[in-house]
Length: 552
Image 1 (cartoon, rainbow, N blue to C red):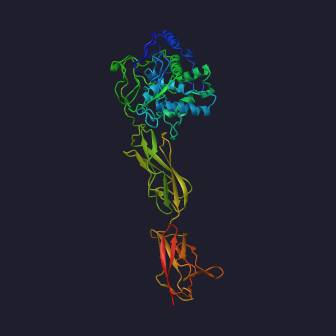
Image 2 (cartoon, one colour; image 1 turned 135 degrees about the vertical axis):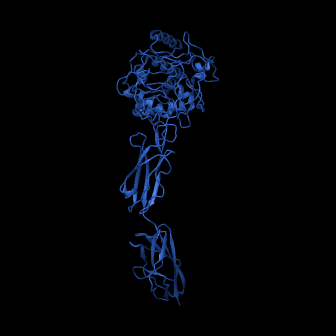
Image 3 (tube, rainbow, N blue to C red; image 1 turned 30 degrees about the vertical axis):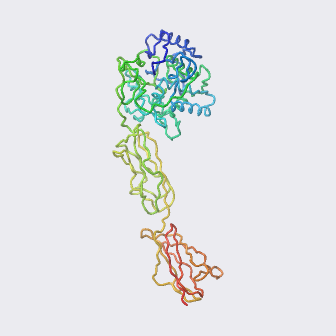
């Protein structure tokens, strides 16, 4: 947060608070500050007030978060008439604000009795990640750089063994809180949501994270318009009275007025001090930059925090227990985060042949980088005879250096119809990619006469040599395909006969037999000598022009 244009609270700097150190004195100071700001409805709430049940079960642990309180002044957007306004503090990045409002609107229809306001999500988002580092998100709402909490290895924080195979936090040994709303991976697996409608649930996406946080807060039938339920909801997110007071302060502050500010299109600044990330230097205002004290809360024994099932057990902590300094840059994750489709979704082949193209997927990290060596299993589902080599209905392929795994050669079989192919990573929760495939009947690519004898008739007579043709595809007979025979001249010349024996010059159809052979009905000649054309067209469009001659 910017230091300029801000009035410090009486007796209270912007420094984050340390747990377990003078808790009573701190509570008194915080309470005095909140009273001075006249934030309505802000109460202490009790430690250990986390709600029991699905959203409130806790396992002992430690955690850190932003404890800076809002300015004393009521917020006024830039250009407002009131003096001493705090437009910089009340401004919310456009995409982040949109995500909060969309989540609240969605939950208003899903859980109308909850009464969740988007300002509560904004208060939590402020405390958890500084509004996704000041809106450092892409056009879809995904953070430009990962926001990771400290490693939950028991060294001053909760000891939470890896629950996601490093899918979200890049750590295969212990968990870390992830994303703008700081979800522990195990909690995300239960509460994750798709807030932007892209078919994925990603804690790094502010739309997904905001909706998931809203669901979490509304759990157990809470009515957030009731003070007791509101307190319990916030405490279920982080079981700390100091956390409760801080969130409530920002909640009330945002309810008094906010305005939209542009997203931060740079992944470097603003960086919330101490927030775990990959790369980047010290944040503006951090001790390393010579700015105001921006140290984050340090956990210690006797803490009133719990980390476990709640979303953010293990908030990012720049100052490690027992020592100062910011987190070391987090290396780019190399564990697979998901498998995505690489290429076409729909495939088609002719019965008896092989598919020209094959399904393929790409294994990626949470940043979209390819991952080599991931085993991908392709499976065929359906009643067609399609199969991989040797008639197998499944096959496992390992991704290459480009992260891509391509299914083996796939034969269509002789039966027509549709089927699906799924791709999964055995033993890993990387999602399922589906493909649609269709086997169609073969269509002739060539039609020829079976005889080279000229087709001739005398006036008023019959053509003595029948018109017989063969349909083939790639040199092989095409059985049971339809051929349409049409006379070019429908007023005179050759004709067929209808059931009554009358002349018929309309098109007629025939079908090929098992050998691809089709024979036309007998042709007759009228009394008009000349050369005429009969055109045969097979399914698929291939044609054959046959010359008919009537002699005088």
